[in-house]
Image (tube, rainbow, N blue to C red; front, side, top):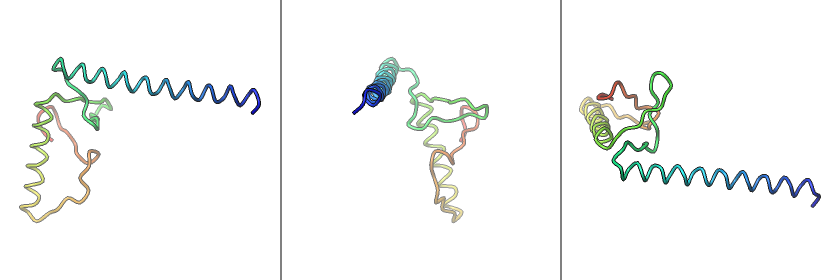
Amino acid sequence: MNEGGKVSNINDRRAQLRRKLKREQQQQQQQQQAVEGKAVPLGCPLPTAKGHTQYLDDQEIWNFLIDILNGLSHLHHRGIIHCDLKPQNVHKIGRAHV
């Protein structure tokens, strides 16, 4: 392997380690926020109409889930089955409604 290839491999490895460290720091920060009772990001962040990301606290997460399930129940009672339920297809309106 030539000298340029070694430098490239070293730089690639440094970049991998930086990404890994950043992920670990984010996980530690989220764990600390959970311990302190602060809002912790959901697995899939909720984009807002203004293009920002909204994070929910525990009570909001439960309310959000209940709203989704109530909506699905309403659809099922009308004979409609939603075949593509995923985070991208759930839209949150305000702080209290899905």
